[in-house]
Structures are given as C-alpha cells and as structure tokens.
Length: 265
Image (cartoon, rainbow, N blue to C red; front, top):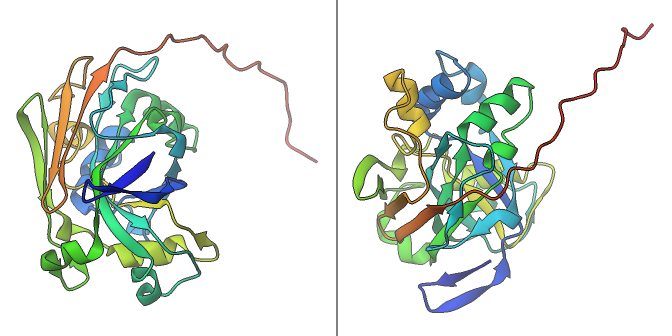
C-alpha cells in the first residue's frame, strides 16, 4: 500500500517493513498480565526499547474490511502512532535518526490474543497472532505539519479508540517512554532503516482490550466480533476506521510428530 500526504498525493514509497515497539508503561503492565500472566514490568523493558517485526504484506488502509484471523476467538485492536522513514540510514545517532522521519500516521496493530498467547509460550512471537492485518492511515502527516504539537522531543497528540461508537480508551502520545527519534536510532543499530520502513509507537495506555483484560482480571469488554467497527482518532492526523469481516476457512495443520531425542554428548 502507499500513503497519501495530506490526503492529496501518494508518497512514492511502499511499506517495506514494520517494526512495532512497546513504549507505553501502562499498556505494558496491563497487557503482560493478560497475555503472559506477568505481574510486573520486567527491568529489561526499561533498559532498551523492545520491538518485533510484523508482516508488511498485511498492511491495509483506512476503510478496508479486516478478516477475523482463522481459529481466533479473542480478536483485539491496538491504538498506535507510527513514524514513516523517508531517508535511509545506518547505525544512526538520535539526532541523525530524527532527520530520517518524513511523517506520521495512525497504526492499528490487530491482534489475535489466543493465538499470541499460545505461540509466546514456545518462546517466540508474537507472529501468527499479529499476522492478519496492520491498518495504516488515513493519511501520512509530514513532520513540519505536526510541529505545533511538539513538546521537546515528544509529540503531544491526544489519542482515542472506540468500538461501534462506544469509547474504550484514550491517552496522549507524549507518554511514550522513548521518543520516535530514539526508536529509529535503536532500530538502525548495526543495520539499515530505509524509505518505507514503519516504526510503531506501541499501544498507548488503554488502547487495546488485552490491557483492560489484564487490569480487570476478566475478558471485559469482550473481544472484537464480526461486524464490529473500530475507530481510532489521533489529534493532528485524523480518524482511522475499519470493520471486521468473516474469517477465511481454517485449514487444519496436524500436531507435531514426536521424535525421540537425547542430550548431545
């Protein structure tokens, strides 16, 4: 997919990769309770920004229907803002990384929580739990257009999400534990960032159901169902809305063939 700058002309770069960070401490604490059962944010979280790679081929735009992931009964959304890379860079300083950011957009990191929980118990992931769709849009707003919202190295943008018109959560982007420039610098450590790379902020506080499940100790509000419409609004960027559609066919995959093994001598 391509972006539109200000809703007028397309950016001449496709989505080439998506690195999604986790930078809001409130979200981290609540969602870890729900997904892994952890009771505290680990000290390693504070030492360096953590991220995972998600599927650039699953990037979709505003208004697109989002299929329920096959086999999932705990579908969720995640309200984020993403920086778009417009200039390549390698092993960047924070100051150099800032110059690589061309603009910002809203990111919805759709998540199948039941699939995510299972695969993360293996010690990998999230992978299939995040593989169905990542929504980006409705436009990319350039860095200079968001200058009035700058507070030091942060963007003070109000964020909110609703389901079928019912408010679910809200936060402000200034609450990020790291700035976007710091995230880009870390992403480039020992490697390249290139035009079309997407850098997700991670979910804001109250920006997904899993976090609320962690705080509430129960899966309330309930998971997203077919026909539900999730709408995200971010100050200075706009409104991103998608409706969940029927799941594709679930084709069975057998369980692993067990093989006898012993420790190497």
